[in-house]
Amino acid sequence: MREVVFDTETTGRDPLTGDKIVEIACVELVKLSPTGRTFHRYVNPMRDVPDEVVRVHGLTGRFLADKPIFSDPSVVDELLDFFEDSPLVAHNAAFDRGFLNQELELCGRAPLPFSRFVDTLALAREKFRGAANSLDALAKRFMLDRDGFDLSARKGAGGHGALIDSKILARVYLELKGGKEQALVFADEPEFETSEIGQIVFPARTKRAVPLAGRLSEEERAAHAAFIAELGEAALWLKAEAA
Image 1 (tube, rainbow, N blue to C red):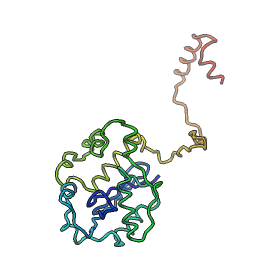
Image 2 (cartoon, one colour; image 1 turned 180 degrees about the vertical axis):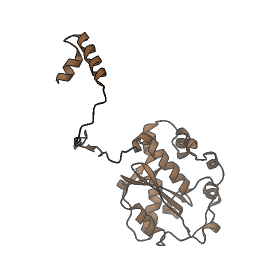
Image 3 (spheres, one colour; image 1 turned 90 degrees about the vertical axis):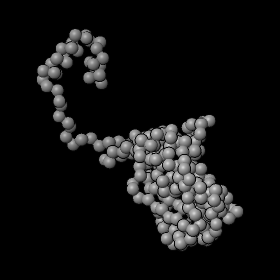
Image 4 (cartoon, helix red, strand yellow; image 1 turned 120 degrees about the vertical axis):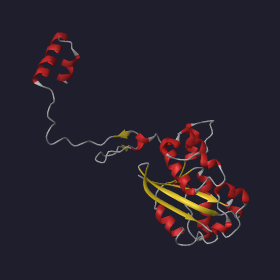
C-alpha cells in the first residue's frame, strides 16, 4: 500500500485570514517503509513572514522572495502528481489540510476530501492517552535519535522544516502502526485479506511440487520410536500421527 507523509510550514495559524504555505515536503511510503522518493518545495507566500514564525522554521520573506508561488506548476502540479490518489499522512492533519485546501482553492483546484487524510496526532492520542503527543514528544518517546535524527537541533531557532519533519513523521507513523515488524513483508508471500465481517482471511498456499526431504537420520527415527513405545498406547504422539 502506498501512502504519502507530508508536512507544511506556514506564515501563521489561520489560512482563512491570509496565512500561507511557505514550505511543503512529502515522503513516499510503501507498506509503511520510505522508498527514498521525496517532494520538497519552498513557496513564496507573497506576503510578510512574522518574526515569531521565522523563529520556528527560519524562513524569512527575503529568502522566499525568489521562490515560486503555490500556483506555479512546479509546485501545485508536481505536488498533486506526487500525491497521486494515495492516503495523506500528517500530524494534526486538520491544520495541514486547511492550508493545503485553501491554496488549492485559490488555484482553482478541487479540495482534497477529509477521507484522504490520516492524522497521526489522533492515532497518538488514542495510543498514549493523557501523554504529550507533539511530534517532538513522539520522536523522543520512540528514541529516534538512535536512528540518526538530531532531536536537540529542533529546540533551537529555525529547528523545524517540512522535509525533516516529514522524515521524522514517517518513522513515528511506523511506530504508531506497530513498529518495524509491521513493515516486514516477504516478497513472495501473499498478503492476508479482510472479510466483510472483519475476520482476517489467509489465502490458500499452493503445495510444493516436490516435498522437502526429511532431515532425520535412521538412528534418530529409531530412537524416537523407542521413546514413544515407552509412553504406552495413550501417548499423544500416537494420536497425532493417526490424525
